[in-house]
Length: 443
Image (cartoon, rainbow, N blue to C red; front, side, top):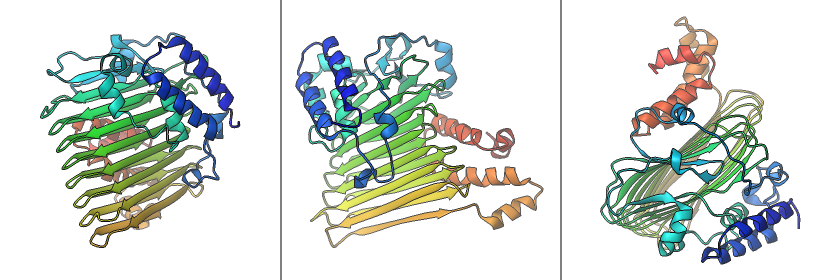
């Protein structure tokens, strides 16, 4: 046994003492066994070649602290999306807070609740839609999440229900004396022809050190549509590991927007299985790093059936001594004819010390397909800098304007205006002369 798994095994024993025995107990123990056997991933493994997680393994993060954290409605109001009328589930340091949530007015048949409540009330729905990948040891972090699964969001939309208001899953972290671990599990089940917008917001309210290990299970039935946003603004001292698994059926549509702005070490995995004709996924991603941040994005799309479509556009802005990783894999399985798969990763290096490892991949086992992929790494365009300087714009402001324009290529694809405007505000806030840039961009 290595990599400090002993600490997590002992923490799991404390959790088991607190929970009642139920159908999930065996699943938790099976996942823990997989985690115990494999430990944390290391850089000798191909999928983790460029991301060292020893800081997480050695962190002694605990998921069983009983410490109470005080958060006011005013604090939450400051970080909510302006003018966004939404349902909201709020979690503080990994634990559900009903008093800070907003769930009034849900349409008949729609379920939005804490996963702990769903485990008791909707056993069959939860068990049928919670991925079993943890038990097959696909990911040690996913196994760890399953071993500690308790809180998170459970969302269920019946057939033909179109949810008019978005659902915001607000995960907040704040001043815990002990380094805490949160293992949120989100289970989203969409029946045929249903439609929804779901936002996962991960926000550090101070500079605490903690570990977020999030898993989201998405099930989209025939002709279901989900617009999914993940906005990661963790503390710069924290660690964030996220895994999203989507099972997509005939004519389903998933639009995924992944924005990474915070965290010391961040890993985002997205895996979609296009399992019937007409299934489509669109993936947009933006990561901005500075200092010594490390952000790793791994995506995988399995085209399992003919007439499926995937489109991916990820962009990175790297400064100082930060590092990023992009690995996008598309697998076109045998007999998955007449599919289309397009992938692009573009990176902007603002510092000579910043580094990006990018690896777009295509594996094609069918012969009648349209596929493309590409990656670019570069610096700001000198001709454009010269043009702006010639218009009496100082160099720092010119560089910031060009950097914002590069990031805006991803942000502009966000259809929900309150989210788009908030992200534009946050991105500009990371640039020199932020107030002046907001004047130029009418922010």
